[in-house]
Length: 394
Ligand SMILES: *[C@@H]1O[C@H](CO)[C@@H](O)[C@H](O)[C@H]1NC(C)=O
Ligand SMILES: *[C@@H]1O[C@H](CO)[C@@H](O)[C@H](O)[C@H]1NC(C)=O
Ligand SMILES: *[C@@H]1O[C@H](CO)[C@@H](O)[C@H](O)[C@H]1NC(C)=O
Ligand SMILES: *[C@@H]1O[C@H](CO)[C@@H](O)[C@H](O)[C@H]1NC(C)=O
Image (cartoon, rainbow, N blue to C red; front, side):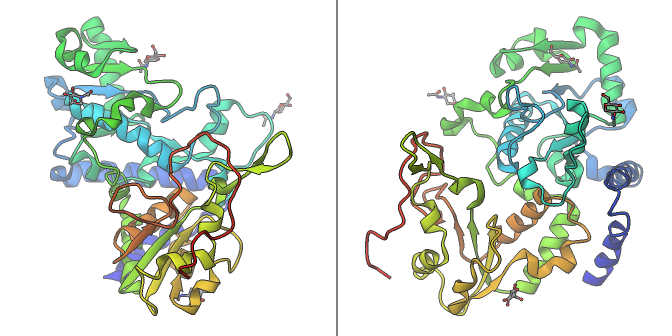
């Protein structure tokens, strides 16, 4: 079975170099896939009501937030990392769930250049902002399994036939078909008949970040989708790759070591280095990791490490106690299908989620094991980095 699937993926290997062709190719495959799934397996899309004749019945109503997740303020050329954008996407999906509407997903997700080592970003002087954006983005359905998402919240893409049909219909209906709203709260959109009866609500989300619309997230009872929702909705080919790697790893534990952008320092006015996460650089070094995780991970275990640390051999000291594994150990499996770091991280995340013991960089829930006690949330206080050990447990 595993071998069969490998064959299936081989078709992604060939047209790698001209990225445009590749992208078009993948988009094409996705469209074909979507179309064929429409034709052949209608039950997989039961909640999406894609068949055009259903549209005339107007059973489905739609919610549109725009075509870019999380355009961060004025800097729409760029975007934030995957986790940040997922917070925003989840926020929009929660609203669709709350309103009982089909969500119109952006068909592409912007890739932050610092998260893109695959070189899709080739800066060629005078492209327009939209061209640059398209150039540094990837197809949403290359990241997520939309049918799977649709089992919870029906979604369609904003480059689909059905979306164009909805737009045309909404325009024909005029003020009974579409409203462009901004700053109207969720309850009104749901309760007031002037909104609730409309085919399409075009919601102009916060130009800063979509997740700003979910600022009441601290109110636990208003959270409808867990953080794990989008990570577990990874596209089929990414799920398959993760399954194969998990099978090869056997019984394993995992750590996620966030260094990269998080450990950056900046000089204060006296030229002294300061950081937002004072213990992070220390706590994510191998000798400190060894000490921290010894109470959770017995010697001899296979330890899967996902990290944005790029120094070769950085984690090798951990091999005195553990059998180390990275996604790079499985590059022959991943290279042919992973086009960017978002996809790579999604595979790594699926692997980490299934580890026997999983240790995050930061504690997110009370029950989480973590490498550092520094809070994840940006404290906005630039502090002196600490490299010494306070206790002497190890
Ligand atoms: C970039 O702009 C220059 C002049 O402003 C023009 O000659 C050139 O064709 C443009 N390149 C592209 C790729 O559009
Ligand atoms: C949605 O509303 C915004 C702001 O009013 C507008 O710029 C945009 O064109 C609208 N989109 C659609 C699809 O109607
Ligand atoms: C929290 O959210 C629930 C459900 O949306 C709401 O009924 C409640 O009033 C909210 N509580 C606060 C303190 O905002
Ligand atoms: C993964 O590769 C590293 C070298 O990069 C090697 O030391 C390690 O044993 C490999 N792990 C597995 C599980 O094959």
